[in-house]
Amino acid sequence: MTPQISSLLVANRGEIAVRIFRTARDLGLATVAVHSDPDADALHVRAADAAVRLPGAAPADTYLRGDLVIKAALAAGADAVHPGYGFLSENADFARQVQDSGLTWIGPPPEAIEAMASKTRAKDLMRAAGVPLLDPVDPATATPADLPLLLKAAAGGGGRGMRVVRALDGLKEALHAASAEAASAFGDGEVFAEPYVERGRHVEVQILADAHGTVWALGTRDCSLQRRHQKVIEEAPAPGLPDTLRESLHAAAVAAARAVSYRGAGTVEFLVTTDGRPYFLEMNTRLQVEHPVTEAVFGLDLVALQLRVAEGGALPPEPPEPTGHAVEARLYAEDPAQDWRPQTGVLHTLDIPGRVRVDTGFADGDTVGIHYDPMLAKVVAHAPTRAEAVRALAHALAGARIHGLTTNRALLVGSLRHPEFTAAQLDTGFYERHLGALTETTPDAGTAALAAALAEAAPAPGASLAARLGGWRNLRSQPQTRRYTTAGAEYEVQYHPVDHPGVRVLSAERHLVTLEVDGIRRVFHVKRNSNSTEVYVDSPLGAHTLTPVPRFPDPQDRTEPGSLLAPMPGTVVRVAEGLAPGSPVTAGQPLLWLEAMKMEHRILAPASGTLTALHAVTGQQVEYGALLAVVQEEPQS
Image (cartoon, rainbow, N blue to C red; front, side, top):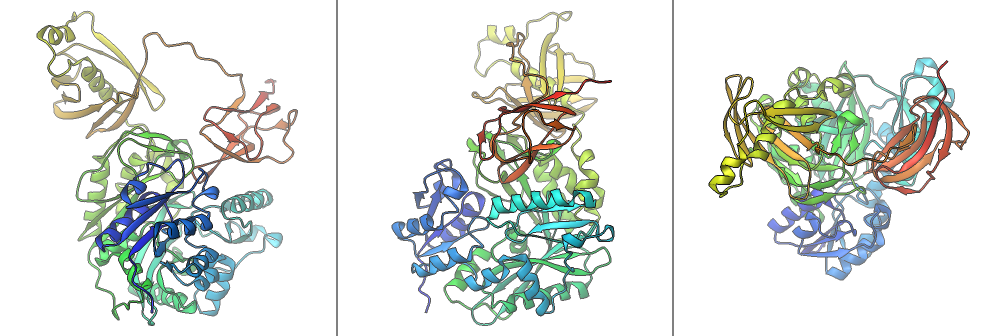
């Protein structure tokens, strides 16, 4: 008989660790966190009853060290380990080691993890179980008729080791790149190829199984809106599926679970073509990032049920009936307009209003570092209908105050309000078609700059009468002037205390400015942190981060023309084969690959010419702005 759990260690970090601790606390369990050195004061550490240090910073030295995690659990008196998602969550050897140490494993049997760990082996297993599959393609014999192809890592997930190939002459390089990325991320460079389905939908089924033969299919989720093959917006149930297709997906997911004697929570993922044919993609033998939408629709706590199943408890014969619709958006510290470049730094403010669920691993003042995923939070809205849930989520995100880092918030709001999304016309090519329009600079930055300037000129609360008069003392012929930059553009604001073209100043305080713009009253919230130069302006017109331009700017060092600088701190994971000083290069040619925050970024030649310097080497840690290489552009004829 499985003993009852009294103390739970979460072998993870960030929002999923905080979320699991919340349920554990509700169930009366003691909680234990583990943390790397950069995470010593992270929210998940502060949320736990006890915490154990994993010395180091990189995941390979900390959260991926199963031996250290088990040692921490035993030292802290935990009797169970929950892996969350990512890191060691789908590592069969780790699951066995947890059990061999006398600890309860909150997950499926190691044999089930092992069976599904390789996508190629999992497909063979599913084919035998009668689950529909896409036929594999041998890259060595691929022809133009097989294009486009999708290359996928056999191990792992999260979009790592995936490439779309549309021309045969790029297949060899894509195979090499996908294999190298997979080996770096999962320790396994095996890659396979299958047909790439244009405008397909990513639909998945949440399953939950106990040790007594009961398997629940907890509805469908649509996760089609993705960037770099990683999900951005998810919802439950998947809209617009015919009942027959929904039932066949449920049946296939249950068959997949029974084929490996599954136990616990898992997800079976499918690709649904435009004509409604489903194909098995993979089975994730863990909790998914998007599990909250299923929890909202079914009124369940999946972590609590995981714990019940791990203790040997039985599920009721049938799950509860679903109600309403739920939508989740992943808020990332990244710049979608700059190739989804991840951002690092201090998160000064994270305030998301409205009747929404917010799962986060950060609080005001926390630092977002370079070593881990750039997701700041998951925001979930649940309502009786899809339209209401989508509207509520968009409204909450639009009204959020997020200061200190560039995020994908505006992209999320634009996506949720896009006609294709509101009409449930979903497919994985959404951002390929609409990214440019969704990342256009908002046209009202000038009004935000005016509000920032008025707030800056406003006297501090409690200032003397002379100071208050002095703050506004200027001649109509000599207006006050302020300059700000935002999104690469510079705005010069000239203003009188009470008179601006098309604008009436109704009130101006240090943190709150009320303007009447073209006859419409608008309230602008203005915030400037003492340890930051940026000014943050939030209003119904949008959110803007403004950088004041100094009146007498300091001279800046100029870099040599053609210099390639690191766009972010990270690790050089690869240098183009044969690249050395003196090598000829062409514009747009990938020269280096830089890994930061679980994503790989290509450093491209800025122009055709000759590589005159190469300072980067594989495995090197580089800081933001570090000189990586120099390309001397060939003279124009």
